[in-house]
Amino acid sequence: MSISTNIDGSVGGGANQLLDLLSLVSNPAIYEAKIKSLQAAIAENKKYVEAVAPVSEILDLREKVKADKAVSTTALAEAKVKADGLVKTAQDNANAIITEANTKASQLVAEAQAATDDAKTVQAEARKKITDATKAKADSDALNESLKLQLSALDKEREQAATALQKAEDLKADLIAKHTAFIKSL
Image 1 (cartoon, one colour):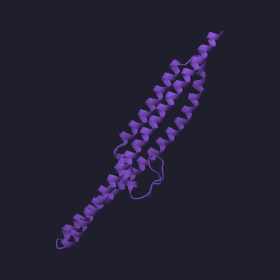
Image 2 (cartoon, rainbow, N blue to C red; image 1 turned 45 degrees about the horizontal axis):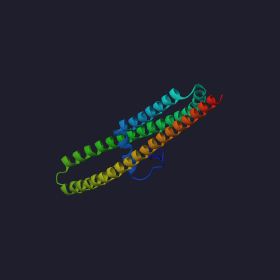
Image 3 (cartoon, rainbow, N blue to C red; image 1 turned 90 degrees about the vertical axis):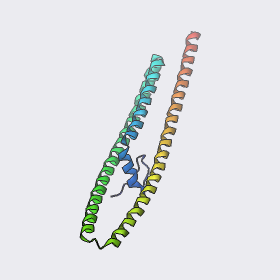
Image 4 (cartoon, helix red, strand yellow; image 1 turned 60 degrees about the horizontal axis):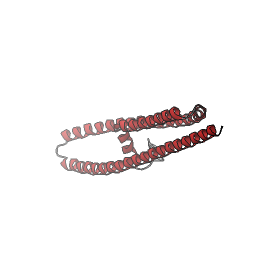
């Protein structure tokens, strides 16, 4: 079974997919924390916009926020569905790997007990396991770097959200200034 997309929706491939999924299963709290942080920032931004704008602007802004919220809700739901699918696939793969590993371990124990004179074969298998473990370590290091890049991308998105909030605040201040000037001109 192969996985065709990473957690961020990009096309995946190569030997790191299984380790990417295993890492996601072992750290779902990190993903959930990032989603909650984004939701909290959205809620906070909405509260400030609604609390400061004049009533006529609030109605216009609410309509825009509803539209943006619908788009965000859809995107969030799609991301959650993708993440849930990836988590389930990773769990299924992990269970299959554990079952396969347990089966292989049982076979190795039975073979060792039945054929103690076959030490050279067991030694060759042990060397292979060491090579696999070394490869797994290298794959784990690569996965760690990939997660760091994803966290960096999340930080950039957070900065973009802050910039958007500042633009909204600037627009609000400009509208208030125009509204005040209009009232003074009456």
